[in-house]
Length: 508
Image (cartoon, rainbow, N blue to C red):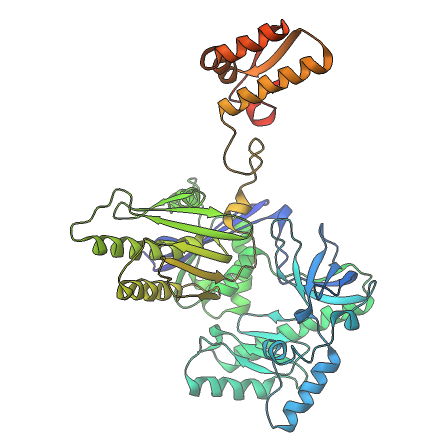
């Protein structure tokens, strides 16, 4: 079997893509037509509200929720010109957006000096809406191709950090200088490392044409308006993940197959030969065992090879991983048992970060390691595993309490949030009120109802487990209430399996 494959399951409503590494699921991407992603889209928006105290603004881009624009993502044309002149005077290249943000923090004008309510601005979505938050947008625009990314507001040439060879970096810089317009910034992507100049020129020509179309729409658009929509999931994921290591791209939908074939033929030399059409009756994700991996990726407990396990808890603010030895007791001394479990855990944790697309703040509660050298071994193992992760991460060293604090760049909803929704019965808390709690609440509600209405004949619609608790476990308390008010109570049963999920546990 191939070392790396892209498996694409698509229909008119949903597209699912799995990246397999050595026959194991490494990453999963899902997009539904009704909830199509907006990252990369460019809009003509309207400033709805400027918040000086937060140095941020809310922008109406025509989506359900207003987008959020942070002050550091506001483009100040005057500051860009000043920086450009300053860099030119020093004989240096123009700043790229990241450098501009870093160097201009103190020089940047307050957001209220740059934006006003009702103002029309062009923004690009940097992060999908997450939870109750709207999309995060930026005024630093970029258009990605297969080999290059262009930045219309800059003139900088950047080379992917993953291209480490100094001579190759210089060669690519010189090549791009010859072919790019003076008023456009260009970033060379990792995929361009060993590509011919003709393909870079072709990619640049396509991106410049795309930008001219966006610019033309901008001049006549009535905001809020969509100026540019990024590729659909199948094309975008293939564009971003394809490399010489991808040996096969297997697609089960004919229309998606045809679109991909045209796209690959036009943009990635030789890639179309690796495209395979799957047309067997057995679902493609079943054949590759991907459905089972998706099911496991939605579980809060993940087993480790030696018998230990992870408990994963995702909240809106952060995600925690709790490492436990479980049934594993080891064969040597305690620190060897703990070290082995922690080493298995960090490997599995990175795998789950990628599969579940978990981002933001992450806390890993490892099993306590007394020896500093053991903590160093586990930390290095974690860093090594993260090399396979394309998302940007920042990891602090393991504390004496065995805690790892880290961040992982988040641009879209996690797999759990994309495929699941809060429980209607427990309001998303993941736990439900116990039968005893509901029974005691019911007794209080009967008392309250009797005092307020004076009625002594009461009908109670109640789950059977709560009725049994009152009549058996708390019979004395229940009878005391009946005698106190001279009540006559008739119970009517609800269906535990169905109604408890959508209705109150009892009704007086």
